[in-house]
Amino acid sequence: MTEYILEVEQIPSVYESNNIDLRFVSKDLVNGLKIMNNGTPYIVGNLALSEGVSPHKNINGAPDELDYKVLLKSGLLLGFHKIGNPITLTTGFPFSTYQLYKEPAREMLVGEHILEFDTSTFSNGGKKRVVTEVDKAYIMPEAVSCALALRKQGVAKGNFFMVSLGYGTFEAILSTEGGLVQRSSVSTFGLRYAVKLLEAELTKTYYLDLKNEHQLDTAFRNSFIFLNRKRVDLSDLKRKVLRQYYEDVVSPALRKAFDDNDFEKSNTMFLAGGGALYNDLSECFQEEFIDILDVNVPEDAAHLAAKGYCFNSLISNGGDRGRAMGLDIGNSTTVICTFKVEV
Image 1 (cartoon, rainbow, N blue to C red):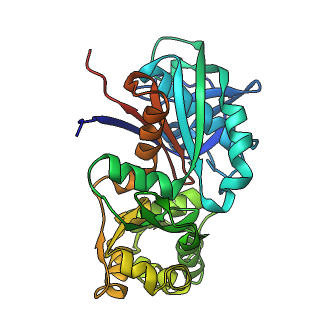
Image 2 (image 1 turned 180 degrees about the horizontal axis):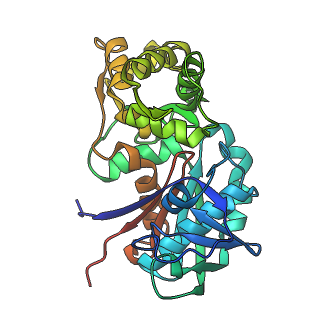
Image 3 (image 1 turned 60 degrees about the vertical axis):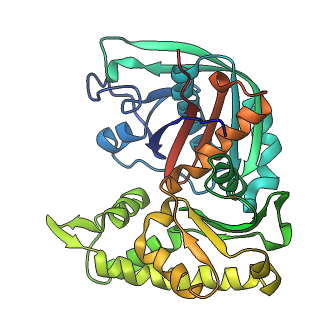
């Protein structure tokens, strides 16, 4: 099997308009993204978190919405600095929006993109402009892309259940070597459901001081939050709401999607997405399927979708690793994936 070395960069999926002259506030481009869209400057990702007032993103945004356009431009800019032009690009959507968005997204992606950005956030430079060329663009369902990444990296073969635990959407499919079993696909509420449960519990005791959704998501991931200058441990509450999320949303959806015939075809399940990194949540899967399936969490679970997109670009452009790129514009994190090419 050919060995492929994948390189991944990621930024928080948040942005905010900003007209302030920011100089030397970050160490490099990925941490100092300030990009223009229709004449308005936006700080993106880590820079938005450090310099913004209320950085945000819509959930499961459409291709024509501002948040998608800003994060797309940011991803293309970072990809361009890795591999140059032209780019074969693959991205995707959850099953719930895939059919609706795939054609508008593909039409928007193909062609030249003029990217204006400010380098003074991390250097002595100023405003710059580059043109990226996307010669081919492809759109895939996220869960299918995760399964492709596992197969291409030699982690999985044959039939297996693929579960994607994203912030906005939870998805599951039965993946076979011939493709997915369409009947088995499910798409429903993601980890945002658990974060909202946590927020509701916290408001019973604390004033949350107008904290936005991304700040609460960060606190959820870190298992603590600062309120009124006090550190509040969220470990027990987090465990409680994750189990409630599994019992209320995940388990019923899986019972509806997979039947005994499906379990006869495979005894392996893989968990992907940011939610796969929560031990409290993966334990719920282990408990439900202890006598049925071997539940696995790959080391690169949070990046599987972007890697699958990148492999699809490689397949589609005839094997040119120097032009292949995968872009996962997630609700919590945007991931850019390219292949390392030896010079």
